[in-house]
Image (cartoon, rainbow, N blue to C red; front, side):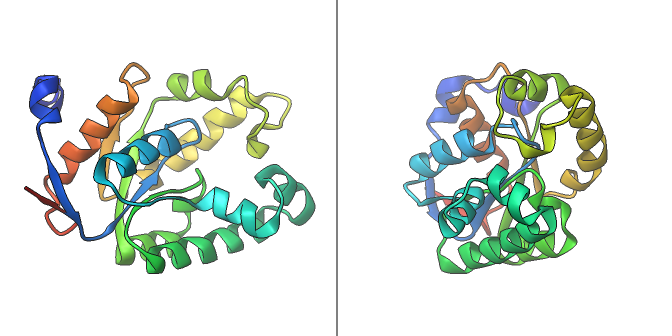
Amino acid sequence: MSENEQKPRSEIADLVPGQLKKTIVMVGMMGAGKTAVGRALAARLSVPFLDSDHEIESAANLTIPEIFARDGEPFFRQKERQVINRLLEKERGVLSTGGGAFLSEENRRIITNGGVSVWLQADLQVLWNRVKHRDTRPLLRTENPYATLRSLYDARVPLYALADLQVVSDGRASIETMVDRVLQSLRARPDVLEWK
């Protein structure tokens, strides 16, 4: 058990974050909790919550699956890069990215220059339990979605491991506990977040 997990809930809850100096960018696999945890983290810090997939959908007036079907993945990845760059330049907050965003070396550079990357690290079974009943994941629209997810997981984990910070998403912790874990990991980064 890590030192963070051994701390009583009340002690972690008593930590009071101060000014956010850089955008916190949530990265990881589909189903890791980037949007839910990111939204709750932004609320806790009283900063804007940004979602790159939502921004792309709003600009295109299409859903992500529709963009993939109409224009293909390369087009989507180009728009994703443009949106991430714009959001990092626009304002400080918490930014949730799509599962494939951090795979691009250029996106990783943009994120490193403009923020701090936090990998929500969930194992394959946790991810599968969260995504298996949803039809909103275009990359899993295959004959064997579990095998596809496993293949994506195996290919992506080494790249997610390049993130600045890693926070375990074990599938048992509440969203608020996950926010506590992210904040605890950010204590090592005073260049990102001040503490009162």
